[in-house]
Length: 326
Ligand code: ASP
Image (cartoon, rainbow, N blue to C red; front, top):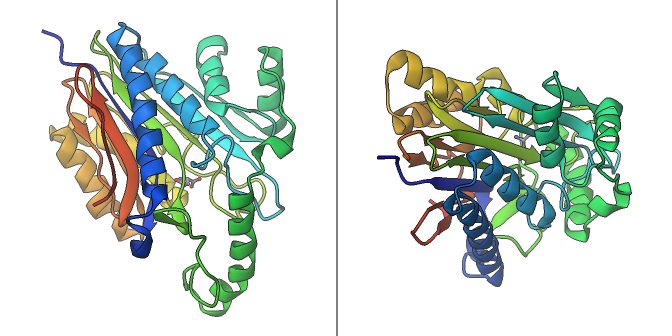
């Protein structure tokens, strides 16, 4: 008998603003996660593929300004936006990715098109945008990505950059600046990638990841999110993984692939492999964040080493489960 199809999503990990734990914002995050899970669930319930379910879930996360991907993406040091995304099909090991794009409304849909229509796996910058246009995606004006909330965060980060340099390692909220009072997870100490992983009724898994990167990042900087193996990985033989966190450390640990590799080579469970990567290996190099993963048996794990991670999962036929804090 096939295991029950399931989808899991994340909307970034980070430090919780404990004083705001009861705020309305918390409800808005739960409601958004819940709605997006319900949509992914209905794709799977109708017999849709894991690839379709993760594409659709991440597209919705990109369109939702609460999350740092697509609309709502963070600002670079130059006050612009540069977006990254990747997707992988566990049944074929086909993958697609784009990075450093400024005019693509839904990077995940273009990454999917790379998977389907190109002999290559990854396009960057102008080449990625040209590929998108050639494939019929209408470019958006860069102002589409501007949101006031992210703009305020950027101004804060820019100012605090001096504090960070002066005090070597001080966090962005040290000093006089007030955190933006409308999100349960401190937006100034939050990793904001979004992602989805799914198992479909046919026993196939897929993963998708999309991000605006980190606030005030240097122009041209690319993190783990669009890198197959670091921020995204899927193989029916092991699992599907999407990560969020300090991208440089996830790249150095080849984090997403390491979960799959540990299952394959050490023979450990999904949960054990994911916990090893997030709770042991990443902290060794100060890697902060988390991941979501499913395997072909329908096991789901959502570990993180920060105080919170916007997350949830939904099995076909059961109510979605969403969570923010530990
Ligand atoms: N991992 C992403 C990056 O480094 C950031 C994030 O998860 O928020 O670009």
